[in-house]
Image (cartoon, rainbow, N blue to C red):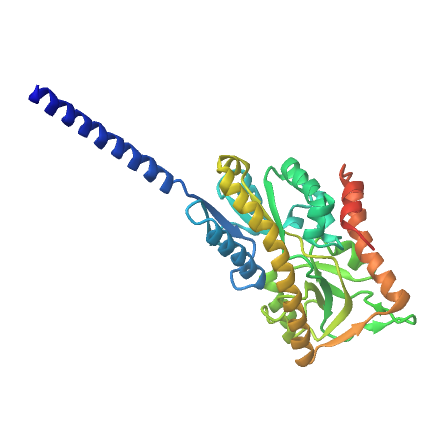
Length: 337
């Protein structure tokens, strides 16, 4: 009887050990359940936009410790900027941050952000963001997570003082202005000749006087040292930044509900944070370039209104002409003038 009792105790001890080991295995599995998303940016790390994306990465990594983390792998040196979203679609990389307008040929709806006059937060509330999520999924095959860094407007900068028109406008007729697809029709409407030059080559082009000016956001003009040559800026600003954070659909589907919640909440929060940050940065940049001698030509009254109409309508017309089925809904959500 004593031996039977001893065997029973031993058996219970072995069961306890096995149960403990199983519990530790489950705990270890939970500890290792953290998901890591490899991300790239369309911009060099030194630019303010990439630094802002790094702020989003830091927010997710702080909130998602033990659940989900973002590994910021790099910028254009990893993949050419206009090929990064396709790399996300194919699952080569998990997440990307960059301009939606790089893909206008495939997704004309990107112009809704270019021609937007509302913030990302407002678009989440009025349903515009949900429509854009559908467009990103249908046209580019990726999941749209965030529209960061909104509220940064674009300007026309020139090397020499542009001529003025009788009504107080600017005469850009025949001037060669560095452009990108989102500007082309607007610049042409102003009489300028759009010139396509990659960002890394703009400094040399300005140095050699191969063009007369450039379109560019308020932010970054000093980071790139273009203000050494561009001495005039035409106000008001127009358009708005179109910077998206997208994620591979299969990777998204594989995330836990907790990880998805962390990412979604961080995205909505950082849209507001980045907007506020860039408003401050834009004001600081404006003061700095003025202090360094840049002259601002300010259009007023009817001339200003006509200038802005030319700009915004060029974006919305481009989308309409492309036959977007989302045109009416997106214009209602994103264009308030």
